[in-house]
Image (cartoon, rainbow, N blue to C red; front, side, top):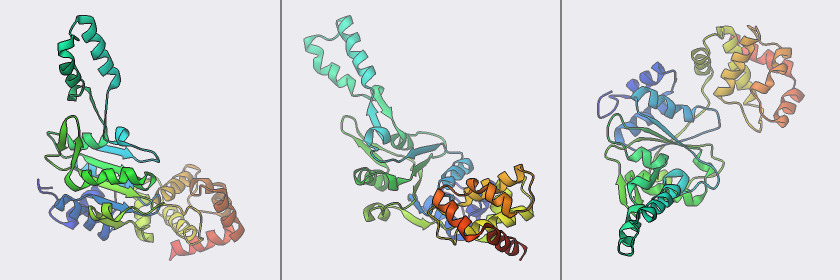
Length: 306
């Protein structure tokens, strides 16, 4: 990779594959453009399709530090960007009082000292912007759809200018922009203002052959026959209108679990016994079982063989 970024989309796909991530052409293109244009990349898609893994793989590839901000309802500036170390500030005041430094004439100076970088606690967003040397970090803003509108609005400055303004200190601006990956499971729609600042890609479930390749890559102990049958069975499950359709992560877990149990092929009994590795809701269990596990297995075995 050149200092300006990868030379081509094919280089991105090859580098990701070398670090155990098999991206399709659309995703590799989005990553390439994000890296070359220095634009945040917004990845949306169902849970478990590999959105978060993109950022982890980029960090392994580029050597940049992975800085992860896990979003949740109620997250605020203090958890995401920065806060003041009030305990150290209080200790500083008490020390000044004990040593006699806190005289009447020095009050203003002492107050100014409390709001210097010495007492600043850098949270993920500020850490990602305030780096001096080495490869740029990879900033993962994970599951932004879980945060509220106010926090999303705050991110606009970060994603537009790669800067954060701290009233007491001024504006921190990234000399070298971090690689930014924003993910969303689309439990709510993100605002247009944020989307305009990002390149966008919807991450689909992989096609059958690519999912088989992913299983073999991430769980090499799984036989080719079992990988194909499990990938086919997972694809069948996704057609059933489940509350939470299984993602690639569940496919890998399922195949690894069956291999650990000494299975080289799927049967109705083993599928029924291991559904907990691929399904996470009781209603989904009931739907699969009411439709017939044996029929699911027969369809999956047939598709895998074809």
